[in-house]
Length: 297
Image (cartoon, rainbow, N blue to C red; front, side):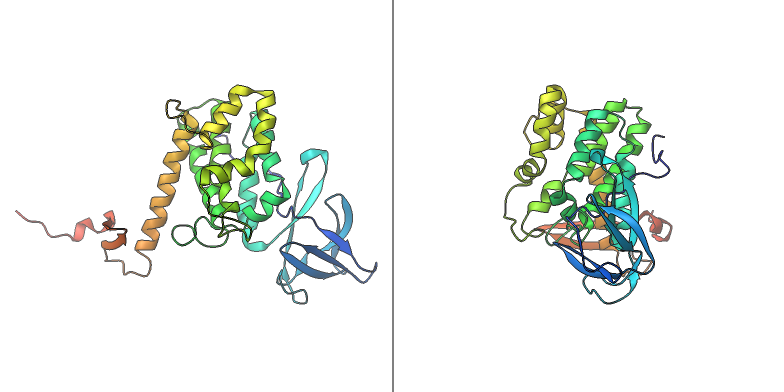
């Protein structure tokens, strides 16, 4: 399987503009739109933050409380845009964002990989993507769920693409579609203070539009495929295998999430849960309890 082939994939974990200030030998203060933290110089490593040399402490505390102590990992060396950059990542999202860039490393079609890297290396995208919710009040409504859900779908899509022996370009298109299929949600009102209530289709176009224009200039056919798979346009007469796989993986992920919610905090012997969704009753049943059901003649 073409999965996790790079031992040390690039990890771009904190792309918000970071500025180092303070007196040399005393401390560096790093500030960005979402946090401000003071790091003592002791136990530091040299790093390059957005092109600026700085010393970064590997032990710190809460991202929002500059004076306490907890681990903050300095992760990955990304060589995107011909510039080496170390990025800071809050520990709870380290595994998810590592997964994102591991999946990026599985994309072998150059134009698709370049397009995805350009989107994910946009500070205005990645700084919201890693902590965004997948919805306002239903499925995937916790902080960071959008990235987790996207990685989940991309992993399943990769497995399906390998199973069906899709070409490199189809597999790459499936991964790009999976990772970006809901990227527009970072612009919606429940993830951004400046967000508004708009359709997801419009929001996706707003996020990836500038980078799609670059694809159009290089490869119009690829541009059309991306527009269709990312649901930026309505073209029901065109079916891409990559899009079909991602939609199937998305449905599997959402159904599994709904099952986990339905059976949360229930005893093992519960085999039926009824929940309300609009005016329809949904019946969730686990197959593990069939042996306990009474048999009628």
